[in-house]
Length: 430
Image (tube, rainbow, N blue to C red; front, side, top):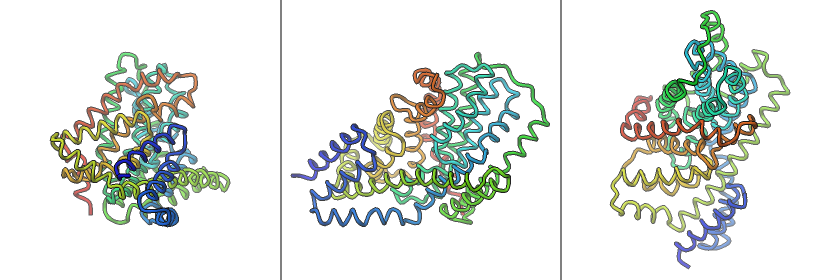
């Protein structure tokens, strides 16, 4: 049997396993080991199965994932998300639609210490949605704003998905984090502009601005600023690596929570258990992806796809458009991390062969999969919000998020047209 047929059969089995709800990490591991065995034999496949998980778990660069996850969990449990929303409300509430603007701002701030879109959306739904409903926001506008704001967690550093992209492509993770800053800020500003323009007529009136309340609220968010400096700026100036910054960030978050009386021994243990569960789930997917990657390499799928896409005559940007369209369509059915792990090993050789910058492509592809978090039928952020605000239908949430999908596509085109917006900060790093 030819390698092409084996590879094709492997993909069929993989999607069949996923269709019957086998976790994607397990499914990729099964197909990877089975496919590798069918090409080179059972004994080498078993050796691969015994060695690859150890290599993934002990990889120093990947240790930043559990640290950043722990940092986000500790930040949530110590109430930093509530303080961000309070500060945003105090300073932006004086504008029409101020609560919507505050929600987007709080999502951006929380993304800078969390790294997860789903966690950002879930946290802000609990905090911001009840307040927006009290102020007179419709279900569609309130949930749409939060769902879109939640996607900032996948782009604004520290981003777990960007870290995984860096691991798969052997691109420096610290550089990827810095590259995500400007696109993340641009997304935040465009979301705020969308709130004002799209929902302008139906937004509630502005709340009275009180300087004393604004200054008081700022005193509550000093911890977020300190964490941003400790993590992101220390990476930018070359003081620490991304992994070291993750460890420092987790430790600082715990110490701040304890010093402010927000964390005790019980909540610390709960945070550790929650972070451990999430980390194990991510590592399971990464191990499965590693095994599946060996199967792809032995059947030369990436090389064949590279040859095909570079020979069809669509040019650099035509080929890039096809890749992004593929990610966008798959994003309607798979979650962001699954897409990155499954598809990047296949398309990355094409991208490098076409001469695109790996750091720039990492940001672009993360922005593309970000769309899958708020588009049907999967729309992970939408389902998370629906699970919390259960009386709001999925249709209503998808309707509310539609203008943000349009503005995300515009932002994607803008960053493709002007790659310097992504690359100028990384190029100035120490």
